[in-house]
Length: 259
Length: 376
Image (tube, rainbow over all chains, first blue to last red; front, side):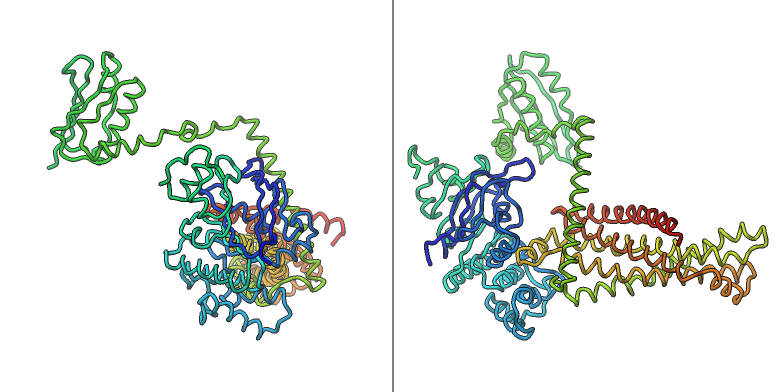
């Protein structure tokens, strides 16, 4: 159902040891949203992502998946929640010792009771969906960066997750490949109803896909803007967000225009 | 021939220092010393610095570096530096360099910590490292528990490749090293035993030495350098590429998938390699005995068989299995908890080999004491 909260983040604090990176992060991702986490390099976007997908334990606050707190749940419950999550890492993170088909097949083999032949069929289907039909027996080292990312996406989609996370999807891609990946993201959201969370600072991509967003500020160490990025660009709540969304061309906004 | 660099200055009017730059100001000539100019500024009476570049022929960063230093020296003394006389390009680049003010904290490295702080930091780090190792051991134990119940996610194909790599792949180097170790043991013994006419006991020395001690020890050291390092480098690279994270997010425990097959492979292959090393070492001793000490082949063989018991080999094999587990644990732990840079992979590999060798020697000492107490 649209509008229902898929992920809620309440007062999350991110820290490496004693160094606080971001604090008091609260936002909700609705089902079917394409939710963008944006901000300048080094503001902690990727760290936030690691906390959302259960790789790092937060220093404070909660991450709720459909009302169930990820870090307060029993390990079995947490595994069950995270099975509904797919992640595309920055470099694709394909297992380099396996072929593409084996990469896509591994999660299927671990978590389903399908026969090897069925798994092979499904793996071919997922690879075809991302435009890599016929590449089943290639190893990751034989592919270009863009193809590796698409293969990583096929693997992330293997278990038909409810939520897909993307870490810098356009990093290292040429404009066309980047655009194709954006289209693919929108297509997945449209046809499968997948909720999408994207961490990026690529403006073209942000305006093309985002339906909601938060802006993490590096100095204030918290969220300083939220909402549809197009609206944020036209009516920036603070000067920094305005400059970020216009590649530094926006003038300082007039006083008192905060939304 | 290129024109040489010329630097001069004069005071045509009160308060004005005119710096004259001429010739070719290029990097290959180096940066000229600022000293004479600074001394001129120190003399006082200068309010404004201007430039005369009419005779300047060519320039690059060599000129810019000099000017940048001069402008900063001028700013420190609150002088006006008039850039109007400089070439257009140099002026623009200097404006660019001065556009963002220098960060007060950024350009200085933090002061080195005091001795006590360093000591405390090192102690805390060691403690954290020990805690990490314990946590890893716990994870591995849980993983083997899952494996025993048939619920661990371990790929048979991976295990097969690892078994081949840890076993058959190591044979050539194990052959070479153990043959030489057997040879060396025989030489060392022969020099002493020959004085008493007791050459035949070289067979005892080599046989016991290889079976109880050197076979397991040398094989373990080889495997630490060969396979333990490879584990750490491979898993470390996987960590850097987020492949380990990808496993975790897909609900596949990295310990089960990556560490268990490696530990199993080494634990299974090490005893076999040790047995092989024992036999090759004894062969090395035989070559010395027959070739140098004039012992008969049959004689040497009989003495070895007479002296060695099955228990002697058992002692070595148990040691081998334990060492194998230690080498694999060190390699996997360092690899999976590797940092996220190329340098960290190198450190993980080094650390894996050092940890493995230290723990092998410590474990050997402990096992020897235990055998002694049990009278094996």
